Image (cartoon, rainbow, N blue to C red; front, side, top):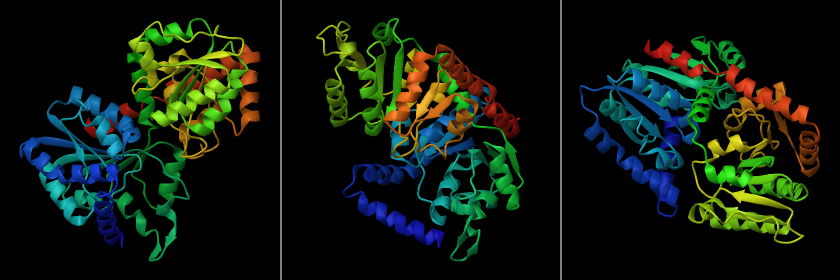
Length: 421
């Protein structure tokens, strides 16, 4: 049934590619995978294959890839993506010898892909459980690992289905070892007879520490912030912006940096309109790059209450969090929150909307007092009022956030040692 479903899905994607740009990129990219493998991988190459669904999973696997690239140059690194949003951004990633799409998980594709790639080791990041690829890896004697995976009792694997209980455990049983994020995941797997499991934490924490340590200063942001306290809204969406922008319209002594998740002209104009409505002077980051004197003036009129910088380009958010006193991570009113550790690593409190239950670091940071949830305008105002009026509460929350990240780092080293040493 799984394989039949994959064939139906494949047909649907081919049809969708006629009308949908993202689907077309995926279908075209997949069609090129086998020729790329033939050109770039020789029969004598020793290959380690990493598979990530998209950018988030890539960042979790990146510490392992970079260490492998540095310490074991005898291996050729193959990196595959399933999502165009991951592949298009990282197709030129220098830490891998070849980056390509992973063909759909049919038995024929799995055989063809693995025959051409012939990896010695396959590493699947977090939620990647492709049955036919995993079964074929085991049949071919390819050592296969799951890294940074996390499991919950309500996941599809652990429920009754049409053909009986737990038929979908099959892909999980194919792994030689699973390196999971927490003890709960290990316990759940043990309840179903899967014991080749080690709790190591999330490799993403190692990645955010590395990003922090390597982050270059951003003079334009530094000049914008000056000596004022700054609120950084990272990966924000409309529902977030409708709450925090009016609040800071009443707190003109705080600077506001907005890095929207969707950088489209229509969304940028919506943000600018909301800023105008709440008395903000504002400027886009690219405008500052083109004209370093274009800083927003808060002296334009008595109606202007604050200054905002809109980050309308990619790749800067992880460095910008350092300039904040408090950070917001968006997505909590829709798709789910984004990368909380990326902000917490700078030792500042992080706040987010209510859709955060499936994010382990968010829950752990809430439990230790380093992050906080808001549901509406009133709860957001209560959190920020406390931080503004109680400097010790602000300091302590930031200390707990940074402390959690540093105390729980090291997952990448544990995985690397177990797999390659």
